[in-house]
Structures are given as C-alpha cells and as structure tokens.
Length: 272
Image (cartoon, rainbow, N blue to C red; front, top):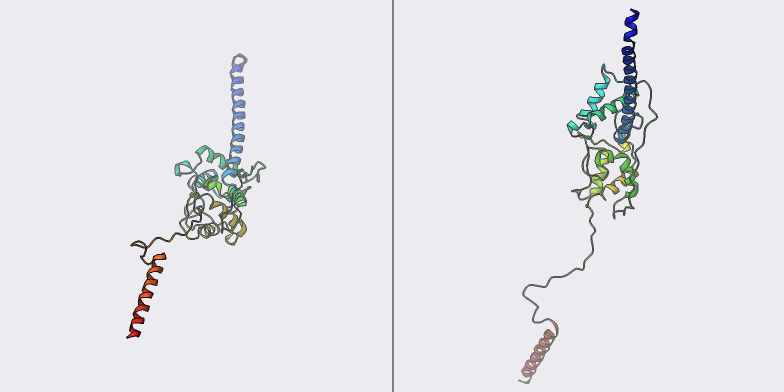
C-alpha cells in the first residue's frame, strides 16, 4: 500500500494541479463574462430597463425570476423578444445584433440582481461628439440638445446616425405635411403592436415635452425633409402669339392718328 502511494503521488499531484488551474480558469471566465454582460447591458438595455434594472420604459429586471431555469427564461426573452410588446428580438438568428455568447453574458449579469443586488460596474452611454447643428426653421426644439438625448435614448435601437439597427431608419424623408408633428407623436405615444415604446411622460415614459421637441429637432436634421429653399424672382411668361401690335409707342401713335381722323370727320359733318 505504501509502495502504491509512493508511486502514484505524482499522478495525484498532477490531478490536483489540473483541478486548481481549471477552477481558476472558470473563475476568470466568469468574471470576464460578468464584465462583458455589464458592458452590453449599459450599451443596449439600460436605456429601456434602467441602469440598475429598476425599469424605465421596459420591464423591471432587478428581481427574482419565477422559473425553474431562470437562465433559460432570460436568454430566450433576449434572443426572441416578446411578441406583442415593446421588447424586440436581440439574437442574431432573429435579425438582432447579439451573438449567443453575448446573450449568455447578459443573462449572467441580469441574474446577478436576484440575490446580490445591483452591481457597481455599470458604465453609462456617452454622447457622440458632433459639430454644432443648425436648427431647422419653424421647427421647435434645439437639435444640439436633441443629439445628446438621441445618443442616450435612441441610438441603441436606431443607430448612431439614425441608420437603423433593431429599430426603424430615421435618417430619411418623412412623408408628411408636418413631419415634426408626426415624429413627435410617434415618440410620445410609441407605435402600438411594435417594439417602439411610448417615451412621453404622459404615457409613463421618461421624457418631458421639451426634451421630445429637442429630439424631433435633431431627428429631422438626419434626413432631407427640409431642403434649403432659395428664393427666386417671379417671372411672368410671355403671352402666346407674341407681343400685341398696339403695345408701346406704336399703340400711342395709332391712337393719335385715329383721334385726328375722328375729329376731321366730325368737322366735315358740321360744315354740311
């Protein structure tokens, strides 16, 4: 027995080393997955669900999930969305931007709120630096403030330049007589039956009317709905058939000759 232990201890030591290294690797992978999930959450989810999962225009996530396998529940919701609600599908298989590994990292981060509370690692979205934006005439709101609001609330779904992502393309011409009112109504009330939620405070959203006006002013600068209109002189087209023979000095001369003829005829009648 002693001989057996003496000859097998190198193998036992090797197994113990492998177990320790494996556990360290799993721990490091878990930490990396948590940090990735925190970053992805801040970039994609916090705008709707709140920085700490407290809920905003989306559901509260900082809670205990009533499921035997909450990990599968959360991953399925992220992957496929919730039909009939404002929760879109984020999985690449459904046209979204996130891979399965990224969705798994998001799940780990979200489920950490079940028992440990909100984590401290929650980087915030930062606004993109842009040159000053010239306001559009007759459109209420400040597009420069609207650009910041757009980055903080809209870019995650509609793209940094309104090019579209999981939300609609906004850098376009809006087919409306008053596109500013059309865009404002959409932001305030959302689009029922779609993934566009209501952002107006009157509908339970986080934005007040002045903020929505600023957003509208910025969004309309992304397309060419309001092209620059340069004034041009009014030109009256010439009448068909060319100029009248009685126009100008010729008309005055003909009128004078006709008047003289009439006077001569009247004088001759009087002499008779």
